[in-house]
Image (tube, rainbow, N blue to C red; front, side):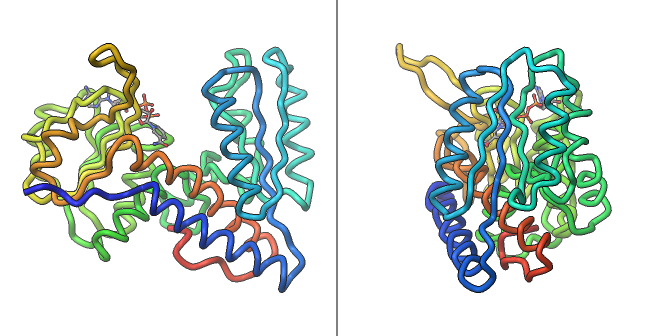
Length: 296
Ligand code: NAD
């Protein structure tokens, strides 16, 4: 058996189309243009690529993009002052501070200074608490994208056994909360988990978010399970640079019922969900109905 390939690139295009439709309606019916402010501190090359891509896609769906590039040695007080300005700017509905920040800046302090209603990354402690208690929140983009793909593939997730490998605050933990919210029986596995292969073999849904190239082999996967591979790992193979996930795709595709590839799976969904969160934040800020299918 060869698994269905879940095409994240095509699905992300559909999400962006939905966002663009909603943005157009907001403009036409209410004269509102959603705005996303992205703050980049320093010159980390990967962060620069992400920020450029976020800005480009924001404009493509018809929203306003505000980029703030600060020097690597920016004082914490200056960064907090900028966030305060953005918090109070009615044209800005979403604020994203690109991580990681330079070492002299306190990431938790910075993230928690963002107005939670504008926290489109969903990392503010209030949003973490709201998600954990099943209340309306801003949901972190990568797990939101994974959830959307799982819902699209399965319809209802109720009662399914899900294993999330990885317990980070940005992927593993919120992913587990979202699956719990959809009534899965959830196990969070991590670096200290005993007998990880056995834990994974029980799962109808496996979400791998570890950051170790191809660490999950096909024989850990239950026949017919759905595999969501969040990992993005650069490796060299046959003298060429290659991107691979946390799952060994070649063997897992023979066991799984459905699987996301790397690249072209979870990756493209992350920015699409950032745009979705921005339009959601804009609707909430204006007391308008939220777009359907773009939130958890
Ligand atoms: P992280 O380093 O913060 O967390 C990794 C987690 O993996 C930890 O909780 C750790 O306990 C667990 N782990 C480490 N070794 C393990 C092992 N041997 N067995 C089981 N668990 C183990 O990473 P993160 O930020 O959650 O990212 C995970 C991966 O997802 C990375 O490859 C990252 O690049 C990728 N990622 C992709 C996107 C995307 O848009 N597709 C977004 C965020 C992260």
